[in-house]
Image (cartoon, rainbow, N blue to C red; front, side, top):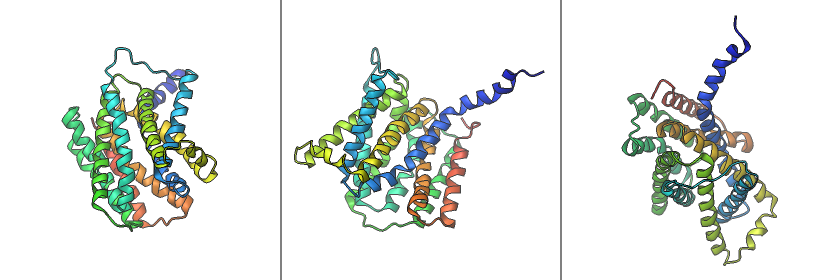
Length: 308
C-alpha cells in the first residue's frame, strides 16, 4: 500500500532534477522580450542612456536584496579572477552588441548571434574538457536554421558597415566566452554573486559613458526617469531581464554543461518574434512556425537527459 510520501517522491525528484532546465528556459524566455522593451524605450532616449538607467536600477535592486539579507556576498578565500573576467566580459558584450545592431541589419546580427551555442560548445571542449556528443553537435545546427528562417521571414532592411561586422562577430565570441568563464566562476561563486558583479561593472561603465555623452552633467539622467514611456520598459528590463534572468541563467550555468546551457539561448529569438506578434501585431506565417519548430526540436535533442 502506497503512502502519500510514496506518491509524490518520484515527481518531486524529477522536478528537482529539472530545476536548472526550468531556470534556463525561463531566463531565456524573459530575455526574448527584452528587444521589444528596448525598442520601446529607445523611442525616448539613446542607447547609452537606456543601458545606464537599466543597470543603475538593477544595481540598486541587487543592493536592496543584500540590505534585507535575502542573499549575501562572500569573497573570503576565493579566487576572484574568474568573476572579474566575467564582469568585464559582460560589459564588452553589451557594448559590442549595441553598436553591432546599430551598424548592421537584423538578419546579419541574428544569424551571427545564433552561432553562439555552437561556438560555446567548441570553447567548452577546448578549455573545460566538456566534450559534446556527435548527436549534440548535429542537432545544434537545427536551432540555427530555425533562427535564419525566422529572420528571413521578417524585415532585414538596413546597411551593413564594416565596423558593424566586427562588433557583431566580437559580440558572438564574447557571449560564447562568457559561458565558459561563467562555468569556471560557478565553482566558487553563487548565482547571486556572479550576477551582482556583472551588474555592478555594467552600471559603472555605461553610466560613466552616458554622463560623458551628457556633457558631464549626471543630473540630466534624472530627466529620463520622469518619462513614463521610457522608465516603465526600463524598470521591466532591470527587474526581469537584468536581475531575474541573470540569476536564473547563472544558477543553471553552475548545474549543467556549457553546451546544454548555450542551446537554450536560441529561445530568445523565438520569443522575441512572438513578442512582436503579440504586442506589435507583426505577421506570423508558415516560415515563422517552421523556424520555431526547428528551434524547439533542436534544443530538445541537444539537452535531452540521456545525452551527457
